[in-house]
Image (cartoon, rainbow, N blue to C red):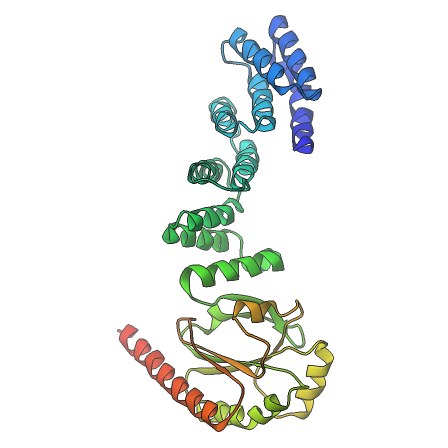
Length: 338
């Protein structure tokens, strides 16, 4: 917080002599700034309020300093009011967007977060979005806050807005992972999963498979039952080749080279992925420590069936569930056709 206040002072101080024409107001301002620098925010608040009164409410530097004081005092409602007053006086509102975002995020991080604080944080962050086009990440914080407030529709709306304004290829892997987790939590639909193909050429994004049924196979080169499952997976791969079906495998080997070497000698001709981030994808899809493990994802991106281990009975169940899911996917296409 001290670093934030210092940054604000760096912006405010050079402007005060130009913007504060009244010597009395300037003297009060300087005293308040000095007191705040000494950590005496309460005394600084009283003096800057008097400075603002002497300036008849037209002292923009006073308002900025008052915002810094209220921020240090954790008087977040007052700090929000300060920004709203500043918004009426500045020519470029975009500059205030970062302050709204910082204030809203500060409130959102309170523990425990009361319903009143949740509402305040949402109000501030919504204001940030209407004030500046650069406060894109406010959508992410708002999605979390609306989810906590049990407003799933608005939570999802802000998540979609984030993806629209800041495409995934411009987001960090950690943030994309968080978006994928929120999408799954809010909608039950899989989207981005933070893993890449074995050769690193592409990332796993289930939104690209909408309209198709996907069987996800978790395996390892050291796993005997995984090797036993591969003929059965090949049967699925060939049987459903002419239908909207995709088979993908995700290796849980400790080193990718082990998976690369094994795949090169095997019949696993379908897409191969590797989780380089410590089984994050397994946590996302709720995979345990038994392999092979399978997740069947329907044409809407929802997990509809799970299977652990490989036996003839498991192959029969997967075959039945895949067939049912494919029928629904094809019926959905027919219903949507004009």
